Image 1 (cartoon, rainbow, N blue to C red):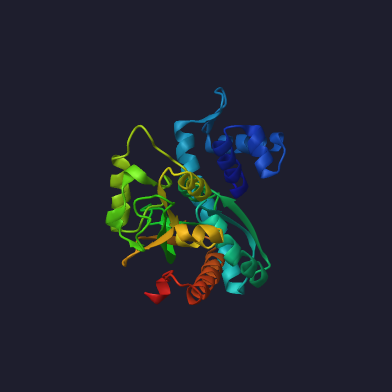
Image 2 (image 1 turned 90 degrees about the horizontal axis):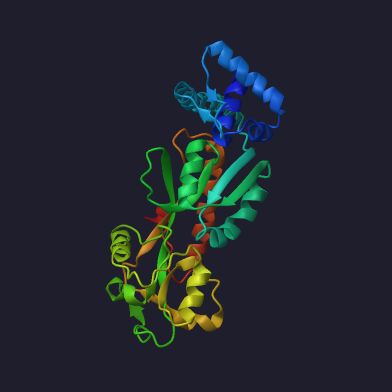
Length: 312
C-alpha cells in the first residue's frame, strides 16, 4: 500500500470515473487502474463497484476512502513540518472567497501578498459558503475568506475584521429623509436582501432570519450580486443593505442614497477559515498577517469604523 495508491483511490471516489481521475492525477488511465487493482489485491477487498455507472464505492470501500483522507493529510503534514522548520513559505495554495467579499477585499491585499511571498502560487476561486465548506472538508481548498460564524466542527475561524452594513435608500423611499437609521426602521415590504447567508452579526443575524420567514410569497429575491440589488433599488423596488467596503465603489452621484446606522451598527464578521487539520499553516499565517495589515491601514483612512479584531 502506498500514498500514491491512496491518492488515486481518493480521485476515483471524487470523480466516480477512472478516466477523469487519471487526468486529475496526471497519469494514464491504465496506470491508475493497475495501481488500484494492486491495492484491492493487497487488501483482498473490492473498493469500487465498477459495474455501476457512475462508479460507486462499496461499503468497505467507503470506510477505506475515509481513512485514506486522514492518511494522505497526515503524510502532507510531514512536508509542512519540514517547510516550517526551514522557514519556507511557498508552493501551491488554494484559496476560496465568497462573492460579496471577493471584489472589494481581493484588490486590497493580493498585490502586497504576491510581492512579499513570491514563492507562493495562489489559486483563487470565487465560491459560495456551501461550496467552500465542502471543498475544505474534501481537501480541495487550503483556506477561504467568508462571513462567519459558520459553526462547522471541521473548520477553524480567525476573524479578520467586522464590516458595518450601510443602507442604500433610493429617491421617494419612506426613509429617504432620515440622516441616520436604526435596525427597527427596516421593513421586509420595501427591502431587498442578499440570500447568501450574509446577514448582520450576532443579534442582527437572527433578525435577518426572522425577516426571511416572513417574506411575501408574491415577491422574493435571492441574489448574491450587490450590483443587482443596487440596480433594482434604483428602479424603485425597495432599499437594500450593502457591506461598507462595497460603498467605496459606488458612483459619486449615488452617494446621496447611502444612510448609516445609529450605533451599534449592524455588521458582519469576516474571517480567514481553514480545516482543523491545520495544513500549510505557515502560508495561512502569512495571509492573515498581510490582510490584517491592509485592514488596519484602511481603518486609518476611513470615516466609518471597520473594526479589526486586534483593536477590540
